[in-house]
Amino acid sequence: MIDAREITGLVLAGGRGSRMGGVDKGLQTHRGVPLALHALLRLQPQVGAVMINANRNLGAYESFGAPVWPDALPDFAGPLAGFLAGLEQCTTPWMVTVPCDTPDFPPDLVARLAAAAEGADAEIALPTVREADGRWRTQPVFCLLKTALLESLVRFTQAGGRKIDAWTAQHRTVEVPFDDAAAFFNANTLAELQQLQAR
Image (cartoon, rainbow, N blue to C red; front, side, top):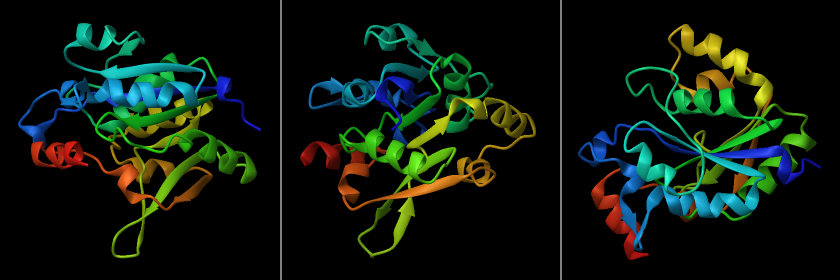
């Protein structure tokens, strides 16, 4: 069994927020609390340590009480830049990533991903969610991965790779089904943030 203490949780809040008008998405309030703090508080009981990846307003993120690491790559290079920043600082054998804009992810997310990774002897575990149309869709920004994959990710991103699924496809990956699509609802736009708040 992979112990929770062997997993570091990383909240990804380093995006440009372009679909939200360029605002710092992680600092947008949801039920009176910044989105990234919601994600951090939900992740904290599931892991041994937590970190935040952010590229702006670092002081605001530091006030949440977790270490904050900016992207290692320039120009808001996407979630993999956040993965890379986290892996470079991670001292546990495993790291799990969650995006700041999906505050209601399952409270047993990490335990289920860890059990599946161990059961399948996988290097990466990703949730897959049944959508309203009945199809399953992988949620690659929620990613449990072995810290030993740092070198592979450095090579991939240095070669210009930016797509999570193109990188995870190079490794032993297990997909873990979750039935509750609403738990993975993410607020990419202000309208979606209002939808989230109306729940």
